[in-house]
Length: 195
Ligand SMILES: Nc1nc2c(ncn2[C@@H]2O[C@H](COP(=O)(O)OP(=O)(O)OP(=O)(O)O)[C@@H](O)[C@H]2O)c(=O)[nH]1
Ligand SMILES: [Mg+2]
Image 1 (cartoon, rainbow, N blue to C red):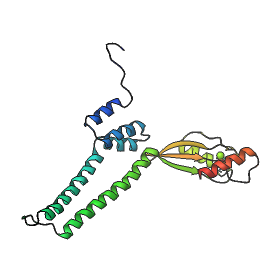
Image 2 (cartoon, helix red, strand yellow):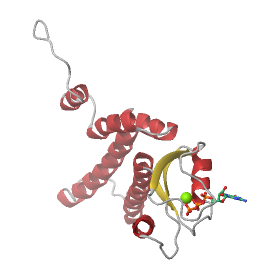
Image 3 (cartoon, rainbow, N blue to C red):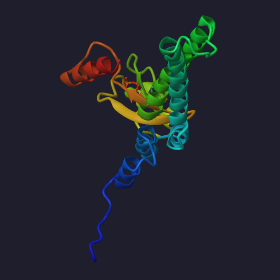
Image 4 (cartoon, rainbow, N blue to C red):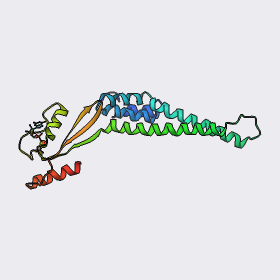
């Protein structure tokens, strides 16, 4: 490179933005989700997180809890001052609101994981049940060999399909039966493992 210039390392600009406080950790993490997003829905979720939606919600909760804490401590430290006390009911209501909010956040964290990693779904059944045909239909192309001979599929076949925005990793497997040879024994072992 000329005049001391060099190529940026992967993630370097994101790291700088984080270290300079321009974005927070949740936003920095969203960048990698954005890059790896496999469906429109995942892309949209990553975009929202990058825009600071998750960070704002967490900061709001933090502010709320700090205010409640300050109020309680003010009454312990300065009981004689003329600060209108929150009633016990008000305090409990606020804390319960915080708990509900955190529960909701944890629930959507699960959804976020599903969007990032996808759902794994094994297609299991007897030989000739139509497992490979089903996989091909879901993918919209002839990925797996289909034949009228039972025991066609031996190896597991993994492919990702976009099901209403969710990445679903379908696993086509060897049909379950008394195995006829050592390859089928291994195939059926893999079917059970997928199951
Ligand atoms: N009539 C009918 N035949 C089907 C259907 N789906 C699959 N078949 C036929 O059933 C046979 C077996 O289909 P496969 O998709 O290879 O079945 P499989 O479950 O993957 O079989 P193995 O890999 O041997 O376990 C093929 O001849 C298909 O054309 C269906 O919905 N209706
Ligand atoms: Mg098959």
